[in-house]
Image 1: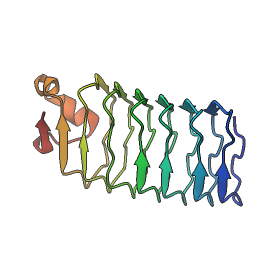
Image 2: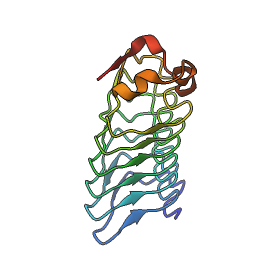
Image 3: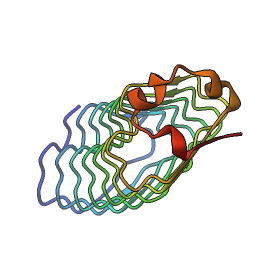
Length: 178
């Protein structure tokens, strides 16, 4: 936990093989970090692990990762590309909040939970498809996604109460059902 917290000089890191998880706040506020290599053995990315890494533009999360913790990539304002692997089952609360440059994201089938505020203030996000595996979407999950023009959701969400869409932060008029 808090391995390189607030290290303004750290620009690149290769996490060694044999590491199983990226702990709480490990690279939080490493404002110069632009390049990170995450080995295949990682299974979880913890709370605020990369929060505030404002120069990070892309990140490849290995297939073995099953959990993206709360605030994991929050405030990574330069992040434009993230590959979420098929093994992820949960996107934590505020996991990608404030990633204002993120325009596109694919949520893989297998994700069951999208946490509260998971995409909060991802203002450049244009469209999103919620896979059939999702059973829970937290409050304000998409609030502040002002460029969001298209949301595709599983048909079972069609019968949700009218306030459901306001609660998760999207306009019902941009939703289509698969």
